[in-house]
Length: 424
Image (cartoon, rainbow, N blue to C red; front, side, top):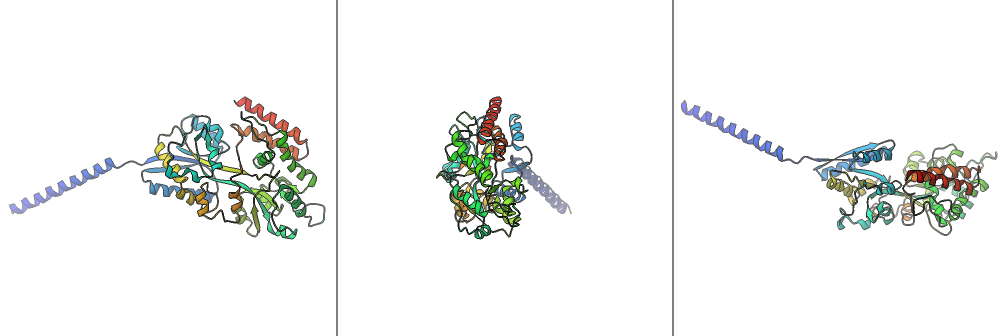
């Protein structure tokens, strides 16, 4: 009996010791297990499908980097105002979107982390479109890596072209104007044009390359507006003449629509110059529409278009720069970029990814890729709002014939430079 009791006690002690040992091992493991680093990524709201796609790419990143957790924040209103306020208050996210238009100001404020020291040869910087990287360079340093882009291209209605006896897209602006006259139709014979040849979007973002076609510039080396030069006016005059005298083009307000894509999709215009974002919109909203794309017609024997791009940038005050770089390098690396741009909502900024996805051979998307080398980056100095708002207000006035073009542009330039001087 005593022996059995002794054996029982020995077994109980052994079990207790084993339990204590296991507990200590568990405590040790818990104590030494690395706590994931939390970093924040901020961007603006976009298409729900794009949002879903980005969240999936971020999940893939976390799987490959188990020591990092990414909190993705959508700033749906007044994005840049929010970011600037947080940067001043040292509460900005670790990584955030930065549009090329806003980049010159932020790059000059010493609030962004230069990325040159993080970029290794394996990252293959040369794979990026040079024109896009240059939009995020300041004082010979790189402050952002572009995540996607779009140039502008000509969209044209194939049925309307066939009906007008046109067999190919226009390659020069003179041809576009000639085509526009042929494409304008009055189906009801009531003197009202039912379909205009071309849809004009008067904002500076769509007119800047015309200013550059004759050697004009948006801003000078000091950041002051200079778009009212004689060279700049030559390009803009083409738009005014077509709208006022030839009456073969229309604005969205003339035909009761909200965008260039919409007036084209509804058949109110047979041609429009739009970005890559119009392709999925037109396919989804107007599935019966037969359309094609082509490079923007040349002006003054020069090819021209605009390029719009957005980069991932790092907050200089980030407490987790190593992890922030890992996120940026994944999202803009070959694997992450392929996942992000595979649906065609956005175009990849890496040449190898564009080729792998076949966009350089895609009939609808290849004109956008062709334009990136000669495109004018959408930037207008450190104070772009002053430039844009002044131009847009006065150019519409000139387009409507309320004042001569030269007078309108001189007023816009003076107005913009007065605002810039006050902000310096």
